[in-house]
Amino acid sequence: MLEEIGRTLREAREAKGLSLEEVQADTKIRRKYLQALEDGREDEFPAEVYLRGFLRSYANYLGLDGLALVEEYRRTREEQMDEQEEARVEDDEVTVADRLIVRPVVVVVLVGLILLAGTFLGLRYWPTTTTADEELPGPAAENAQVLAPEQQEEASQEPAPDTPPPTPRPRLEMFSDNDKESVYYVTGSEAVELSIAARGRCWLEVMVDGEVVTPPSGIILEEGEARTWNGHDRIFFRAGNPTVLDVTVNGIPLDLNAQQGIPKNFVFILKRD
Image 1: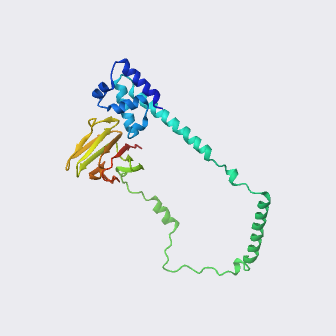
Image 2: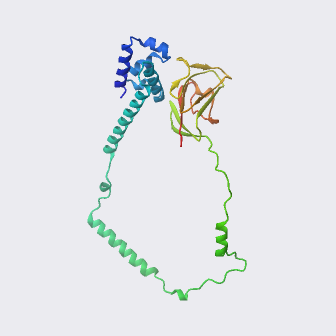
Image 3: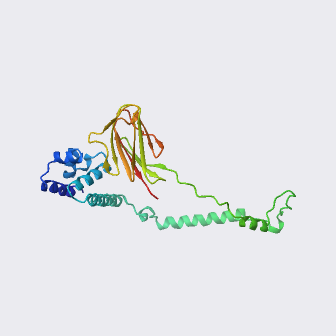
């Protein structure tokens, strides 16, 4: 799905007489990612948010419509995923009729057994006394509280206290989590704020709203150093050793669920109501 877009990028670059090294120097996007975009190799990117951000930046640099190309990629990817899902459902589908096929004789026997059981139970447990013979409940106790209809009406007419609606509070909802990447939705907020404090030396690469905000080689947070980034839609970061980081998103401490010395990606997507 990325091959056709990649050919468009390569043709635009070659028409301008630019090399990948020159593009890398100007855009700060690594050459291997530029080459992967032109070759249509999606698996070269650590996360899809990386791919979209690099695609938009590269296309804009070449004078193309970066947003339009990103939208075209998103649409074709979703169409392919839908087709794959439909094919899987068709292969695995078992109709309700296949599950409910029962021989007519079996149905007749079952119905007969049910009717026979109902007749037996009716004869066995049919009441032998009438309502007139049953003992009626006695008068209510003197201390029993009784609510009259007038009292109910008055209570229902009493106006409810005028209280302002509660202010929405930021929340994090996990979308997916594995050894390589964790993706969260941020709700109850109009922006995403990522704060990272290092308890040890750690390499970071950060992307805000699809734009890489760290140098091509990333940055190094030293022990005791802290940084904050703000985004309108999403923030992505990759950490070389997440276990030495204290991370909060919109003031919410985050358990990174990472392993010592193993890099991992983290994505925080703003989900508006």
